[in-house]
Length: 59
Image 1 (tube, helix red, strand yellow):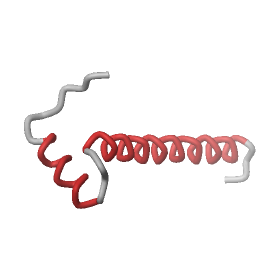
Image 2: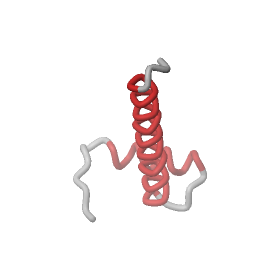
Image 3: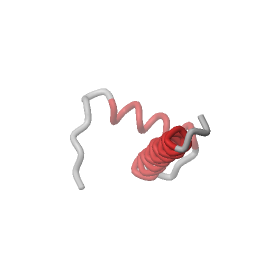
Image 4: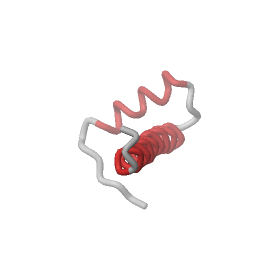
């Protein structure tokens, strides 16, 4: 997959990857995206649980 990035992002990502100790910028970006997606999915699951509890009258 090819992704177009804003002009400033490659340098910023490369610097962050180096600081964080990643072997490559690609490895850093993969971990970054995985972390963000996991957080978004967890938030959605939490909202689904809260909605269900509300529907059942517990909240």
